[in-house]
Image (tube, each protein chain N blue to C red):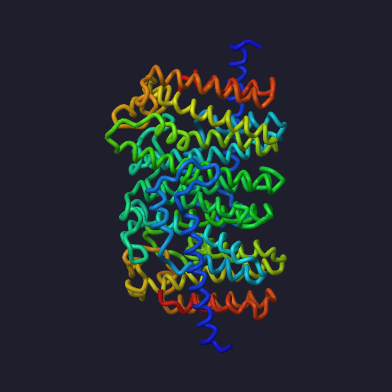
Length: 310
Length: 310
């Protein structure tokens, strides 16, 4: 298969997973209470749905599904884990957009949750999405083996918690208040936490569901870490040169503040080189894992992170 | 043992568990990263510790420990689950105190987290405590059997999520904006979600750790539900008549807003009767469970909720 055809197939599968994720989220984020729940207040469910449905490439769920496919994991299981990850990702967007944080009015081309609802509802919808993510991964529908579910929970908590995504957001806010230029090492660490950890988790969740062996897990983790880093550098570059219509959020907003980006730390040319090198590293890791042609879609995902325009 | 001696023993054990919980939280909330984490930013850890350490009766961990004791669960396991529950409880206090929610300056006699730090740090410290609660219950140190850990996670997510605590907070904020008097049924439901769900979870977590049989679980759940309800009515009554020094927070604050309390719905005398009846129901449930004298401490806990002054 030539590059162009592979790219087309990748985009087709990304769209398919996005649609299936949307469907799964639509089914999960409903007003009907589950066993152990009383009622789910309609306004809260509405805000959760507003934050989680109707947008996004669903790249994290795609990583879960594409990795799980290496091991022939049933699609419904991978989509449950992917939907959980997407709930968690969407909570982080809602909280990051709050006035006390990035103070953004626009997200995916629509008003941010605290604009569409109010600040209290946005905070609570974020809290609810975060909590619900753990509900979904701990649900027997995600995997029959409780050891698998427990590992999914533990890794998700590590990826999202004080030493992962939330810690990265703290570092990011602190970086903005710093006057001196950020070092490349500091930016890399921050990005590995703030965005890298959840992307890596997408790959790891697929490997956990598939009961990957140690060699496979190690290779996939290297893939996920490199991919996550490439994704964020690409984001920094897009923010520098992208246009708002394609991004669905304010572009160029990093430059005005002392944001910790690799473009600021390295300059745009070196950032582009770094992005491309990371994608190559991701692809090389897949080769080490010995997945052969089955991993072609994951290689395309690495190329996609480099070439995407939004 | 007469009532007075039983009360003394209860208070002694409550203090013991509070101290052990403090010790456990102090050990868990550290800057050292766990496997899968990068760094835990010191300012974030400081804010998490500020929110979680140095205060509170630790009544929720007490419920975990006292229930787990019925089944001779190792103390360290019960304390892990109790510490997780306390992290989750403390996150809810931090977020509830935010300017966009209850806008409180004082908590446990100290400035609230967003006053002591800043709003962004308070939101993120809350997010981190919530996430970390799931880390702790999913940790093999909490129980060797992943089926037990998975069940702890799932029930915690249900108790804390959109159909539990967070949903209750949404109902509470909505109630405040309502002009007409709240019905008793609406207040009961709100309280069962906002505070009852986590107290009930404390009891359920002890039962899960102890692998209680169906009859025991059912009895303990009835106990936990009645106890949780009694606890909240007692809180409403204390707010009406309590003094700030003992409470460590503003008293009488419910009366100024149209807060959904049972005192407002029923009047103070009927609220007192309801509180006492709920405590009796809790104690009766323990008798149905057939725990005998071993459950005396849980009966005392029910009496304590009725008699406490803060």
